[in-house]
Image (tube, rainbow, N blue to C red; front, side, top):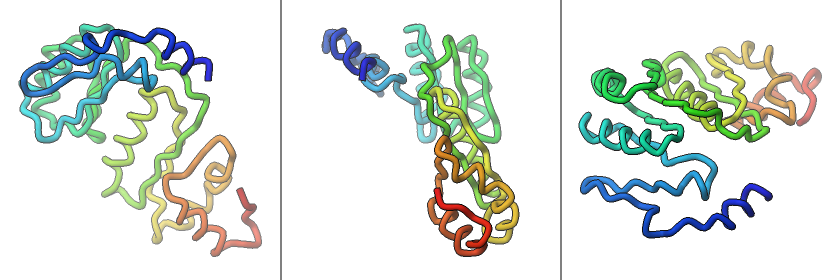
Length: 182
């Protein structure tokens, strides 16, 4: 609540909040309103567009997150803007200039199998860059239910929320005698 009050009290000028690049409008005050800057969705953008947006956002001095970024565009981004890292599995590039304000929350990134790993890693890295603690639960689909049951204590702790409530219900149904309710 205090953070929200401090953000509202700052009340930056709306004239300076948005920068028009012709092909995109950057919301420079999103971090003031939401606690994290605007995220660049790389899919569908040209490499020049991604690099231009990332350069402008990096110039403000804050953290920058680019999702759904192909390897060719990532390679050019890493050369053009210092400080970026790229995770090829997640297709995410990020630049951390400061640790994000910790949210105090833990998040669970879960996937059924290895084919879902890129999306799960994208979610995990994005949440991590935004200041969340991450618990990764991978390859825990129907055929790997035993792998999910091995980690059920992590799913049901108050500090960790699963991305799939159906899995919690499935686990409770399959081993009701040994599972505890959240």
